[in-house]
Structure formats: C-alpha cells, structure tokens
Image (cartoon, rainbow, N blue to C red):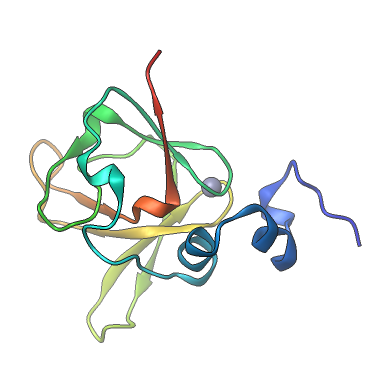
Length: 135
Ligand SMILES: [Zn+2]
C-alpha cells in the first residue's frame, strides 16, 4: 500500500488521520460540526485567504466574510469551483452540505439567508479552514 500525498482524493483513512488534528479530521472526514463560538476565525478580520485544512486549496477570500452572529465563520460567496454540494437530510430537514471540490473534505452548510449581493450564507467550521494573512 502506497499513499500518494500529492493527490488528496487518493489518501487512505489512516493517512488522513495522520495529517489532520482530531478536530479537523472529525469535521472534514466525518462530517462533524464544531461547537459555535469556539473558532478564533470568527473574529478574524485581516485581509487574506482561507484555505482548506485538508489540502490547502483556496476556498474563500477575506472580502467574502461577514459577521453572521451564528458563532461560525460565515461567508456570502466562495471561490469559483472551490466546493461541490450535496443534499443533507440528517436533521430531517433538507440542508445543502458543501465540501472541498479538491479533497472532498466536509466544510459546512450553505443557507439562503445571507447578505447581498449573493443572498447566500456559507456556514463554515473554523477548524476546517487555515487562514493565511495577506503579505
Ligand atoms: Zn480540500
């Protein structure tokens, strides 16, 4: 068995467990949700980019972020092609789950009660993101 570290889509379960923290693994690979108001990224207001903690793909930029008051980092838009979505019925009401298009890691749910211009609210687990401040 050989892991191909350059292609996140082919990583084994054991390889993911090695490269992620337990919190990151729970969210990205097991569709977990962190407790609200726990992520330092809630209060992150600097200019920069938000990358996938699983694979490093750039998912959001700081100008897409807004304060939703929900306790999770929230964005009204995402980089084109950054995510793929699926229907999530686990709470007996349909929600739109989204995950990294590159590595398949779960990030959060997108709702249609966000601000203009998109009207969308990407409710993202902070542990699934890595913030990189602009130089
Ligand atoms: Zn990813």
